[in-house]
Image (cartoon, rainbow, N blue to C red; front, side):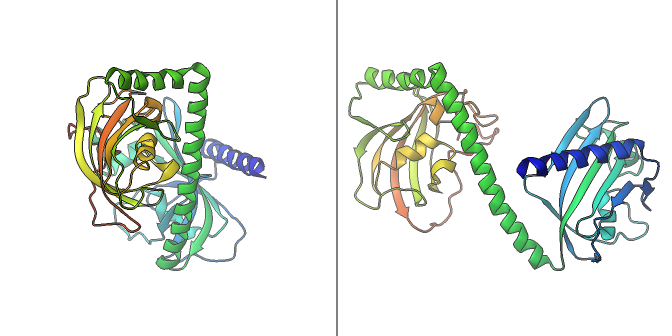
Length: 338
């Protein structure tokens, strides 16, 4: 069933792109958008203010063809149906949404030269993947029409929940494949040895190994609530590079322990070895830190081992007053790695 659905999407997209190039019966909107609507058979009408839910692909054609956006199998797009006033500068497929009904499909074609000519963008400010002479081909499939903003918003929240679950599964699948590959190549053993050799060199023999494989030296286990999945934890930390013991950031933050969704798996797994009031150091092999994809602009190398000196200041079931500075976030211009 899923395979047939994917094939259907691919066939529709191929037909749409072919129709844009070869079909002589494309219409032209008042603002110059070329388009064709394929009737889905619905008798419902769309009115101004409705929320339209659609899947969309966007392809740019020039020296080479590139798909920039494809929402099929992902989070659909939502937009409000608006009537474009005469004389208002506009060159966008949204002027055609008023003509769409549930189940309809549409192709819309724009030209970068027309965008520039209409004064809607300057050539110097175009993204690098847009150039003069390029053609933009949009394909839409209308999934639902909502008569109010509240109904549309409620549906969007449901889709966001589904998208989060999809991303979670995608991330877990990618991480498992990467871990399996590392195991097969001996990479995990090598990265673990990198940390245990460091601990031996420092004379640290009283460490524990977490279920995922991080190493924790517990100075004080703490006496308060236990750190666990879904708990909100306020932690003071000093993050350091294992290679030279230099600090990349010292701060504090509050986060909810996310389990498999945690961005630094070894860090969260290490925190779970403490209770409120606990202190210690978490040593993280590279595959449990940022693995092969450290944040862009950060001071971390792929599979670099890290360690965090931590103090668990608070553990609670509800979110405390916000403190947004978190070690898994990174801004390229702040001089720190997170």
